[in-house]
Amino acid sequence: MSETTFSLSTLHDYWDNYRQRVNAALTPLTPEQLALPVASHQTVGELFGHLVGARFWWFHRWMGEPEPPALVEWGTEQDLREATSLLSGLELTWQMIAPALRRWSAADQAQVISPPASVAEQEPSHTREWIVWHVLEHEIHHGGELSLALGGYGLQGVYI
Image 1 (spheres, rainbow, N blue to C red):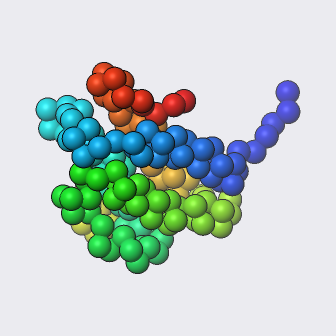
Image 2 (spheres, one colour):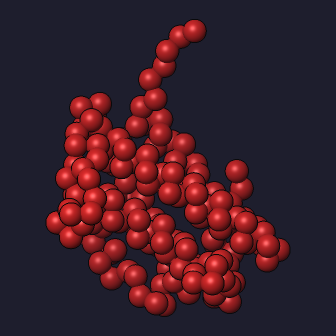
């Protein structure tokens, strides 16, 4: 049995494919569909927005990747009600993630990142590799949640 290395470049390609499928599920949704509940405390639109927020939190706040300038204005209540705004947030955060995945070396992946000061007392340090996987598993988890919710309403979910 041969051993292979799973690079961040390969991960980038797989994640990009998954990201496109999430975007495809979001694209046709109307404001009324985005307002449908996923749970008692969250709508479909809010859950898509949660993906944007998690990407921003981990890649920008934790790892210091540059914030896309247009993202500064993103995140209003209205943004969570319109598919085009949610797609914009997902694309802007991908513009922050994609170059980082292409740029980081094996040594960069092993780097231990300290938490932001706002959560330093509650959160341990993590390697960059752990953070990347954590954000991706977060997206996969919530992508399944979105698929289930959308399918329950007779809408197309995230095709896997």
